[in-house]
Amino acid sequence: MKKIAQIHKALSDETRLRIIALLLVRRELCVCDVMAVLDLPQSTASRHLAYMRNSGLVNSRRVGVWMHYALLDEDTLVASVLGMLREQLADDGRAKEDRQKLIAHLAAKQTDTCG
Image (cartoon, rainbow, N blue to C red; front, side, top):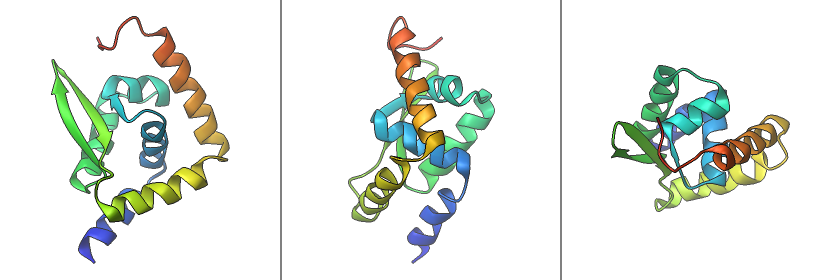
């Protein structure tokens, strides 16, 4: 029950839901991509991503100085929650705007690296 509560607490924040919506588009994103698309300072983006990592929603890996985050959907509870969110966020206006910004941002990036 504790894990269920922790996941729901992590999803109770609009910024974290917006990040999840971005990760549903692209399985892994660098913190710099989240910062650019959601117009967040690095500390805010990193804090939300760390909260989601500690809740079991995402995992992380370091690439140079940047952290990359990916959905952790091999857990059946997390996979179920993400499936529900995928459906609910599909028609959300803010999530659609963020998806369009993400696609444009990734297309404009010169490389897969941040900096």
